[in-house]
Structures are given as C-alpha cells and as structure tokens.
Length: 207
Ligand code: ADP
Ligand code: MG
Image 1 (cartoon, protein in one colour):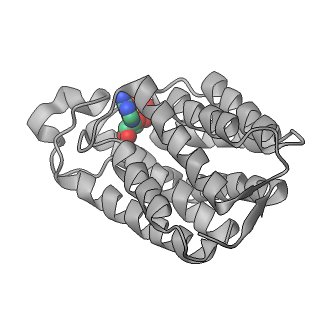
Image 2 (image 1 turned 90 degrees about the vertical axis):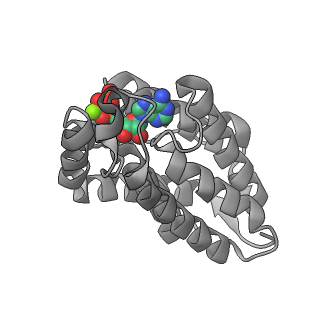
C-alpha cells in the first residue's frame, strides 16, 4: 500500500458505517447467536456501537479509538464488548496521537488490534471466533503492501468474508459456542460475521 491517507473524519465514518451495518444485520447476528450462543450478539453490538457513535470524540486517531474502545468495554456485557473494545484500544495506541494514518500505519493498527483480541480472549486459528474473519483480513492488508489502499481494503474484505464462511464447518473452542462441542459444527459464528462487517465498513469508507 503505497498511496492513500486516512483522515480522522474518515475513521469516524468507518465507525459510523460499522454501526449502521450492525443495525442492518442485527437480527441476523442475533439469530446466528441463538443457534450456538445466547441470542444477544446483534443487540450487544447495536447497543455498543450506538453508544460509540453518540460519543465520537477526540482530536487524534489515538484519542478517538481509545474513547470508542472504552465505550464498548463499558456498554456491552457480552464477550464481544471487551473483545471489540480491546481491538479499538490497541488500534488507537498503535496509531498514536496523529491526525491521519497512512496505509502502513492502518495495517499496523489493525494488527495491534487483532493482537489485543488474542491477548484478551486467547483465540487461535479455527477456534470459530471473530479471529477467523479478522486475521485473514489483517494478513491481506499486510500482503497488500504496494497496492492502492482501495484495492488492499477490498481484498481484505473478501478475505474476511471467506474467513467468516469457513467458521461454519469449525468446531467452537472458545466462548459460549464451545459448550456445544460437536453440535457447534454447521453454524456460522456470529462474532466472525460482525468482524466481516467491520472490515467491509473499512473498505467502503477508507478507500
Ligand atoms: P456472549 O458470548 O458473551 O453472549 P456475544 O454473543 O456478544 O457475547 O459474542 C459472541 C462472539 O464473541 C462469538 O461469536 C465469538 O466470535 C466471540 N468470542 C467469544 N469468545 C471469544 C474469545 N475468547 N476470543 C475471540 N472471540 C470470542
Ligand atoms: Mg451471545
């Protein structure tokens, strides 16, 4: 990724677009969670992202994302709140107190956010979690060095969708779905589904 800069306003648009997609897909996320969890992922994410959007603030990328992350941690009771909250907190710390990010800084911040999810939830590849959609997206961004930002983001969104779809055949090893053991197979993971929306929102707002 050699060209393209991402401004603070564009990052705010990213979070707004993610909130909109979460609302548009709320019932789908909840239905997926009803099959292998406790039927609250859509409402959890909508509550959290609505609070984030209502309180968007900060003059730097770091401040914006740390504020948003703390809001998610404090407004969402389920596992996803602290996990997405940690993602944003680490994203903000990696970005730092800058007014804009270049594509390399964005990829590094995404990697830091993903590392935060792993530090918090200990997910590994194919545990059937949000990690399985987000990790391929981060890898695509890192591999897209030299591509225009828009191309790298679209490739990342496709990688996230593929990762989300691949969770269907996985046996859950983390979170509530893991209580089901073999019966978790055949169902798409709700958190991987929302994570793919996060990456799709980036592709439509940051390119
Ligand atoms: P809860 O499971 O507490 O009801 P949600 O329903 O909001 O919370 O979120 C469930 C999603 O959280 C799962 O679909 C999965 O993707 C994700 N998740 C759960 N535990 C972990 C973990 N340890 N690491 C990464 N993601 C996880
Ligand atoms: Mg749930």
